[in-house]
Image (cartoon, rainbow, N blue to C red; front, side, top):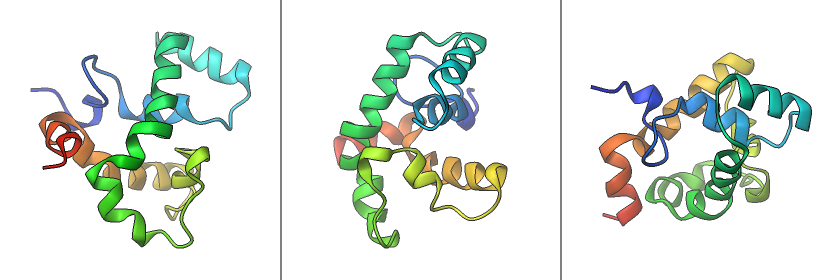
Length: 117
């Protein structure tokens, strides 16, 4: 059985942390490229993840249900960083809270959430 921490966003198995970090627009391009190379993630995959945050995440049942809890709402053009900034704690603690928040989007639960069931 695949751990929840690595089942994220589709057919391929990726560490959820990588999906968030590499989708973030905050790191310099050089830092993002080095991290992508270290994690063996192609630039096309990173581009798809960024598109997912911009286009697909806002229409998930998870976000539609939970977005009202974030006031004022995060700037959706700055995801995932704008969402990460809403979770309390230092970098590690905030990232853990964001990953826990995203847990319903992993594995078989993701199919249900994407289908709007």
